Length: 91
Image 1: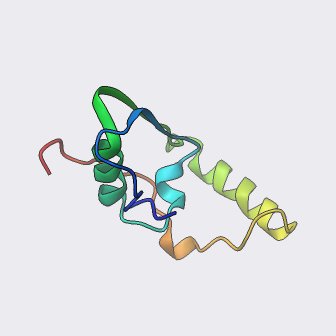
Image 2 (image 1 turned 30 degrees about the vertical axis):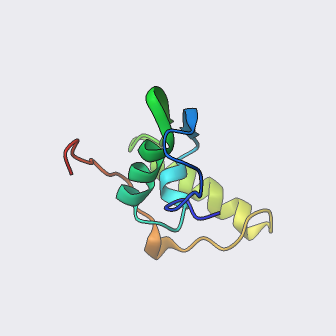
Image 3 (image 1 turned 45 degrees about the horizontal axis):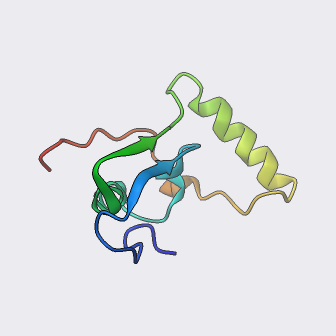
């Protein structure tokens, strides 16, 4: 499924949840992911996003790299990772 084009009707879900730093792992521009999440969420619905704090980002990334090296995850493309985003409400 394409996170930037979910294929659901507008205002379909009461709640959209994107956890465990999900914004960083989808191969899609974060702004498009957020816009699509808003589009499929009902008016007065809930959007929930979680991401890792800058304080623990390096530790979590190292943990994922160890999982990858052990064959538990696919290869991690460090060139496509980003650590934070601050979208503006009107953009």
